[in-house]
Length: 377
Ligand code: UDP
Image (tube, rainbow, N blue to C red):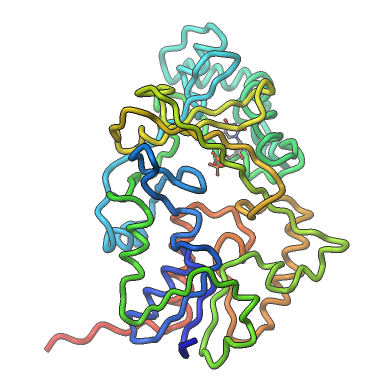
């Protein structure tokens, strides 16, 4: 193994950004990645139907952060993509986030203006100043009927917990709209990388100072990894400490079982993502990848997502108990010299992609190794 000044465990967003930043200031960087590919959970590839699919679920980039948008544009061209999601509620396809169309379809109302919709929400929501948990957060936004139809069971399927067992922030990810806006996100920049995320990561990592070791479990070669200035760890924080608190206090993660199917038809469903918030099926949603970027193929690939607690950790589970356990590890992490914990799994935070980019960029800045621009003469 070559000597590197910077060692990074994991080739996902955080790892790739830090690698690029350090390589750019002349440091030798080694990335150690357990999987047989880069790009972390953003990894995508062309499947047997010629369709660009994501191995670990659809990734929709959206940000309000100018600095992040500027950064990602250095490595790929991006095309505008305003993500939309439909929910199959008892057989009707309605927009989610809830908007005027959703309410009219499910309640038979005839709302046409923002004022009427605001009145409807006021009459139906159970207002709380500071929602204490996910249930109060959803009731505060949409009231009990929509909560039951669209959020309660979906959340149970997604997390194996009811919304009252989760932080308010989880349900607060989904806005409610008093207009006809049916975009999932409202950020200024919403786009997908031309050619896909794997290409984007190839471009970020394309630097002579960066070496990537795939198929290598850091914990199996840990003793040989020495002599670095800094090590950035992007895996699950409890794994780093050999799950030492897990006998009494196990940090929870959710994983997803992706069940892919080729369907011999041009389109299977009318939208890229259809959520199934009811109890009639076990999966949470069906993704039809060819919709992203309007790809053409005679057949189509659809993926049903079943969330599980077995398997690779994808989501931290935000609630007070897990936060408490995480903090034990975090306090310990702060005492490990020259090792930095970064990203969704190491920080045990439900980051969006842009937040992962931003945190890695901010960490690099905070460590003070940015080279000042050379003065022009
Ligand atoms: N959610 C729901 N019904 C839906 C979509 C989302 O109840 O149709 C809840 C669920 O608890 C979910 C959370 O809102 O975990 C956040 O949804 P988001 O789409 O942001 O989840 P992600 O895309 O990260 O899986």
